[in-house]
Image (tube, helix red, strand yellow):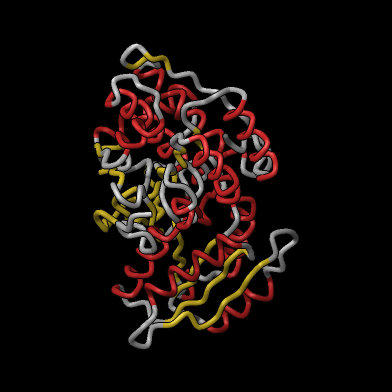
Length: 359
C-alpha cells in the first residue's frame, strides 16, 4: 500500500523499487512458499487506503500488509491488521504513535522523533544556544519541532522564534527577513517535500550563511533522492538521519550500486526502508519454515537484526520499533556532486516515545 501518484509519489516509488530489488537479488521463494507482491496506490489519501486495505485483506486474503507512506494511511490500516491477525510492516510513516495502533505493526523505516531528538541533542552539545524554527504548517512539522525542542532546551538554550509557512503559496519574505535581523545561532527547518527547493533557494538569497546562521534539519530535507537537484543552496546544511547513500560501508556501497544500476537513481531513506522491510518479511518467512500464519511471522520479526545498508538494524522485541544509528551529516560537494557526508554517529537510537515499552 503506497502513494504512487500525487505529491508523495517519490516516497512510494522508492519503497516499491527497493522491494522489487531485494526480491530480485534474493529470490521470491522461501521454504517452498512464494512471495507475491500486490501493489495498490492510495495516492496519499487515507480514504483510498481504507478501501484498498479492506479489499486486500477480505478479498485477496493477503498474509502481510506493507508499505504505508503516511501516518494517516497507516492509522486507518491498523484495525484491519489487528482483526485479521496479520503483520503490518510500516516502511514510510514516521509518527511515533503508529506502532501502538495495533500489536501486529512492525516498523522498518524510522520515526521522526529519532532524528529530531538526536538533532536537538547534537545542537545542545555543539555551541548552539539560540534557534529560530521555520517549519511547514502541518502535523509532521509541528511534531518535528516538538521533539527537537524537548531534546535541545535547557541551560539557557531556547527556540526563541517559531515561523510556520502555509503549505500552498507560502509567504517567505517576511519570516526570512525577521530571522536574518534576529541572527540566531541556527535555524531549525522542517519543510514539506514539495516546498524544499523553493525554501532553500529563498534562504540562499538572504545569505544566512554569510551572517553565520547555521541551517539544521532532520534528514528529510536533504534526502539523497533529491539532493543533487538542490544545488549549492544545500551546501553546509547539517542534518540528522538514519540513512545516507554516502554511508561508508561495503553493504551500502553494493546496495547503492545495485539500485543505481536497476533504476538510474540514487536511493534515499525510503528506499532503504523498503529494502529492509522486504528483508524482514522474507527472513520471517524463513524462520517460520514457510508458514504464513500471521502470529508465527510476527514472532519471527520481533528481535530480528542484521547489518543494513544504513548500518546496524534491529527490531525491538517489545515495542516492535526499529533500533538504529542516527548519523549527523553535512552537505558537501564531492567531485561536483552534493553528498550527505557523515561526521558523527549516535548509536542504537530508540524512539524516545516508545523506548522498549511493550504495547
